[in-house]
Image (cartoon, rainbow, N blue to C red):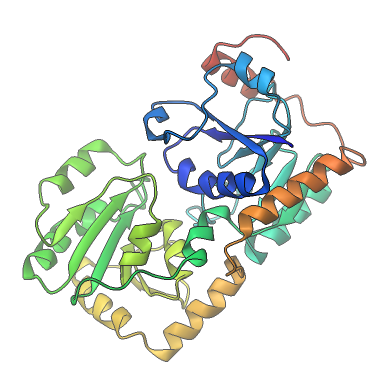
Length: 343
């Protein structure tokens, strides 16, 4: 029996890591959580929490799964990057998504779109390995059938990135308010946990029977409920498209043929109409895009992540170089956790 640790530093981590927890439990292994920040209240009663570094060291996990950029290097076990989202291409370059921070031993990539470049980086840096597994967060999307549609009206899901220069939240707020008032479509909205709280507050004031703002640690039910998504340059667009459903984007940084992209709020209503009509060319473009970013539809990405982790453990660090010293980042995370030993 092996022990594994799930590392949380943002609210969205729960929906990414819980499918891994489920797979670990089904194998008969042990799993525990370590939570940084104000997120402990989102743990369920049957989930084991380790509250101190000492407790983690006593637990001695074989691996730590991380949907973020950093992890305590002094935690036992290999460090496995499982990613916090798809590559949304918010920047002109891919530097953000592919930035190597020197913490991880294994990168479990989502699909060909990310695997190829991470493999190149692995050959360059030589201190980590890369295995394409699919993304654990998507397992619940494919392991159970879609719920029966409850509303006769189309449901529009509105999401937005927290990055102000890319966010559609403020430019589209008045337009969305007016469209919701018509009653033609039922609107639900969900924002990134890092969204400016003043923006969230303004959307809370326009809630009605036809527009609901939902804060949750699991967006999968929202993706399943909606017929179309309206967003900007957010990674949740890719998650939604994996259902073979259409996406309307506002000033997307890199709009492809799988998106219905607009640049003016006045274009929003006709764009939604067009997307809901699901023309053949749009359907085919979405299907091709999905194969590129995440070709797995079996709901077993979490099992592949654990299997890749176990292979790493059995193989060990042979043929791998030492990780970079990474001194500043190591000191920062020690200060954050109040732990000042080197090991």
